[in-house]
Image (cartoon, rainbow, N blue to C red; front, side):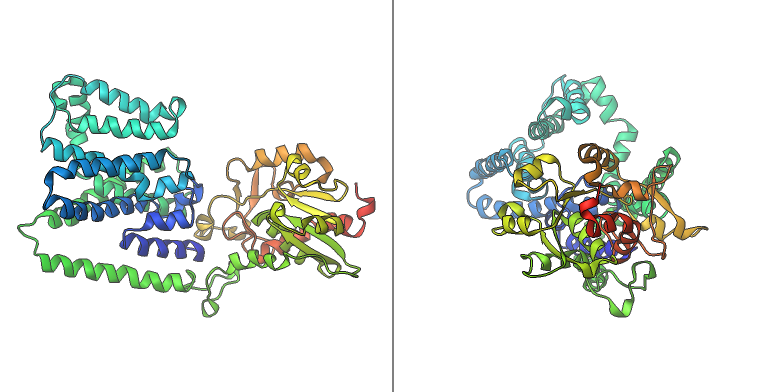
Length: 490
C-alpha cells in the first residue's frame, strides 16, 4: 500500500482493536459515503465500534439498576432510548448522527426493551409477510419517499416487528427467512460482515478499480469461502464455552491484540512509510507523518496582508485546499520571484480582507460561482476562477501495476468533476482557469504521473510538489499572460 493508505489502515487497526473506529472516522473522513472509503479495508468496523460501546454501556446499566430494581430496567432503557431518538431527530450534522453512539443508542435499546419484556416469547400472527414486504420496500425505495431520519426509524421498527414475530405462520416470510440458504447465510453473517470489506478493498486496490460482473462473482465466492472457514475455525471454538478455557481465550486475544496493535502504532508513527516510494519522492530514512498535507498547508503562512512598497505583482488567493494547490503551482512556476501571495480560506471572517482585495493586482478564487464573488464584492477586472481537478479514485491500483507503460497510466476522473468543470467554464468563460482541459485526453482520461515519472497527486485530489511543478509548466503561457501581461490578457 502507498504510505497515506497504509497510515490510514494502521489507524483503523488500532481504533478497531479498542472498539472506536466510528470515533476515528467521525474525526477524519466524516463522510462515510466518500468514494475514497471504498479502498479502506476496515472502513466497515465503524458499526462494530457502535455496537461494542453499547455492549459496554448496557451491562453497566443492568448491573446498576437491575441488581436492586429490576422493575426499573425497562423504564430506564425506554427513557434513555427515547432521549437518544430525540437527539437523533435534532439538526446535528449527518456524520455526527451516523458515527456516534448517543445518536444510535435507540436502535439497539429497542431490542433490549423487547427482549426484557417478552422473555424469548414471540407473537403469533399472519402479517409477518406484510412486515417483511414493507421492510424490503423501505430498504430499496425508502430514500425516495421517506425523509432519511424517518426511514431509519421505520427500518428499525419493522426489523423489530419481524424479530418478535412467529414467521412460520406466513408462507412468504417463512419461504424467505427460514429456507436453508437464508439460515446458512445467517449462521456465517458475522464472518461475512468482517471479511467482505477487507476482500473488496484489497481487490480494488490491487487488481481492478471498478469491478465488473465476473469480478463480483469471484469476489463473492472468495468472501463466502473465507467466511465459512472463519466461522468454523474462529467463531465456533470461541462460542463453545464447554471446550474453550477462559485463560486460553484471554491469552490468545491478548497476543492477537499486541500482534496487530504494536506494528500498527509503529506504521502510524512513521506516516505509513515502510519502504522507499520514488514516485512520491519519499525515502524510508527520512520518514515523517503528513508530508503531503504539510506541503498543501504551508500556504496558510501566506494568510497576511501584502507588504508595502513592493514592485512584485500582488496576488490574492481565495478558497479551500484546491486554492492552496493553485498557490503551490504559482510558487513552483518560473514567476515565483515576481509575485507576492496573500491567501485566505475564510474571507468573510477576515478583518483585513477588503484591504487585501483592494491592494491586490490579481485575484484567484478556487471553484467559485458568481454569487460567491458578488457576496465578497470583488473587482471582476482582477479576478480569475481556478477550476476543479481530479486524478481518479485511488492510486493503489496504478502503484501495484506490473505491466508495460507503468508511468503512462491514465484514469477516468471521479464522477461529478467533469460536470462541475463544464458548469464553471460556461459561467466564467475566459476568466476560468481550466485545469482539466489541459490534462484530459480524447478518451476522457487524465494522467497519473508527471513527465518526470512522479505521482501528480497522492490522494487523487491534491497536488504533490511534483504535481504542482508539472501543472506550472503546463500553464506557463497562461501564467505569463496573467502575471506579466495582465493588462492585455483576453
